[in-house]
Length: 303
Picture 1 (cartoon, one colour):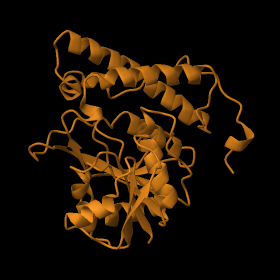
Picture 2 (cartoon, helix red, strand yellow):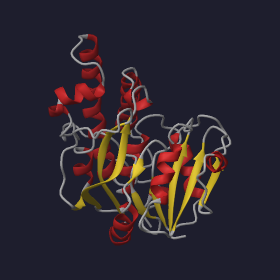
Picture 3 (cartoon, rainbow, N blue to C red):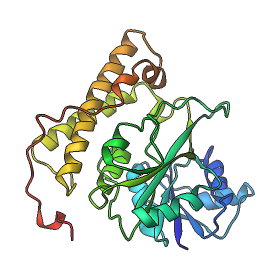
């Protein structure tokens, strides 16, 4: 198989049929699905019982429960047989032509992703995307960090180019970190303006609970502090470290402002807050006062 679609799964029984079915509908057939179970459930067996069976489906296990999406994605990637890795969350879906479009672009540029379609899970209705529109073509890291709001879950990358892994120790911002760390190996990624990834907004999910912002803020605070104290966070390039640092500075403001807006009754969830304060999302923190440059450690140098 040249393409491995990695799906991390934790309590995914209500949604997994949708994500896997979207891969079965792909216009390109040289793929496998690797479901990385983070709750001990054999999802291939579960899907078979629900009438969805295909020899290209595999389930691997993190050997834990709730170890986190980063660890699950790494487990799935380590078990994957394909040169190209496509990531898909268990409650999301790919457009039928997603792999046919994105894999050749990943082969040419190292990695590719598309604008997500934003969908309400309860109604199936498409919601207005609040992402800053980007052109189709190569984009740089700052473009990505100042445009994506809804999700960082979907990406297709060529393992012969990209050495990045998800940080298993990071409980929040791990999906953004993965995009950032890809730029240790790449100068740009290819962005497709056509929506090929369906992000389903589910009330009460981790990303859509108001209290989650306190966790995101705490992790932004911790990561900013570590970068300013000289920790590389295993990011080899000084430019990627600085952009991640500036992203986290901007998110400190966003999360703190959201928490206050909730307390003041100005919004009821993060989506309604985003609609009110889009001005906060389309730029990064200041360039001045960047964290001190770090000496590259021998094991972090690009080969």
